[in-house]
Image (cartoon, rainbow, N blue to C red; front, side, top):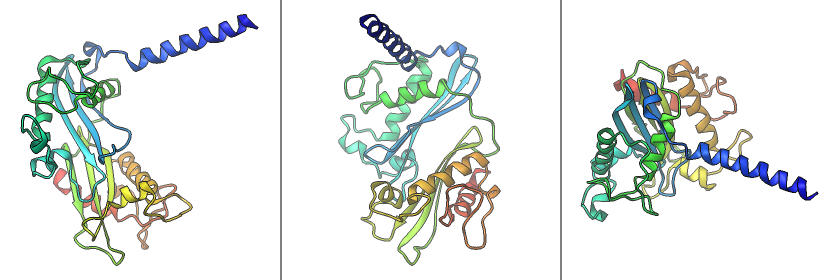
Length: 276
């Protein structure tokens, strides 16, 4: 009995070490294939943002790094555009009086200059004194750098890289209008965020309300944000929103588990016009 317990404990210990080794394994940049890599957080933070990283590797070196973020807040473009427009407000709170996009650029430049993809000089809050011009949390950036480099390169597509936003011009009878933010990396659509803006400027977005359970449909196929994510994933998979057919009633049979109307498809086509 005691021997069996010891064996089980040993197996568990070995398994833990193996998992930990995978989780904390460093990246050997010299073994990373040439290409463009992408990673993003699995979900939105409590502040409503989801961080993203884009890296380009050539001959064992990072030649381009881009740090950005998308938000489930109503009407928000990508964080760099949001910050550059003076809507983020980090400069006021920052010790160095630098906005988020400016600090993000400093971190990007540091990575390209040092090639330190295994950077780990963080304090308990994810901050570092090692990067001049950046006093914000940088840990998430380097975590995503490693995640991106451990993944496969993004296939080459036909669009121009960037973040493309569009929203409907008018609110509908229920007081909502749709918006979409599309992330394009290496010419391919890698992320789509379908959201809704309420006519009440103080109201949270439809995605955020649905996620919190305050906007409820009680639909068989799931709440609004669940179905919206399925449509978004279908657009990423198709690589082109125009490839997903829409019926006369505004719905689609091409995406499993979706019973809501899908105005995001025409909106996504509109957003991508400047990406061609």
